[in-house]
Image (cartoon, rainbow, N blue to C red; front, top):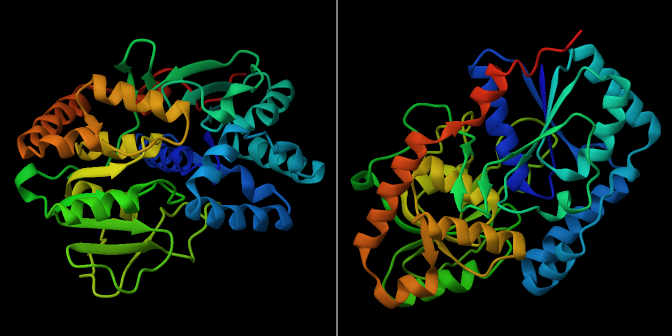
Length: 355
């Protein structure tokens, strides 16, 4: 059994956890995903939901708050943590993949209890993200960097395992998809308006409904009924009024946002880890808006160095569709050649408890 540890306040770790869970299951290794905030008291979860709305409306506030991010794992009641450890024991947890660094203190305590468990800290960002910056080192753990800002390399990938996830370039029906990641933060809405003014057609994902989007823009909003930690379902979207409803047939295998990404010729977004994982799996280039912090800026620099994206402002200066197709081709080749992270977990015997 492999356990993937994620956070609902960073869907850039949660979505990779869901993808990893499905990839390992497809390879015959049982897997479970655990979301940190599920174990917080209800009052704390409500505060997080309220903060989500504030951050999506005020990007400056979001940037300041993320720069000061702290570990709140101590909010989990001791009896809840003891029951969680008992659950891991009963499941026969042999390996743990730490995607959110906020779990590290908890995992360190569990390793003290079960020394045979293998732990890999999987970094989805190219430099340490806020959740990993002050995390303690777990005894015997290893570290995996999917992207590495030191070398500007793509080292490994968490794939979408379902066949047909990547659409041919000529089959893509959406010109640009603009979004702000899982929490809808950033300058993507202004960027979408800028593209519409330039005569481009755009699909835009927003945290809340937009009843009357302007011509040339199709709006979607996040399903308010979806919450990380309630299950292993991917996030869902609701088409806005006046938007042709998408089919969204593959909710078992990927998120609705990825469904739109795979149909698009470019994504307009900040350089979050989840956005880049979707970009690679769909072979859809990214035109970057303002990053949330230095860890996202590092992601952007790696993606641009590899020829998988560029700043939106730079693309608008040229507006050359051939540049997008060239980035798509590079992404397609990179995705075909990238080492699958789940394969290494299985090959190294992770998931089977040492005796």
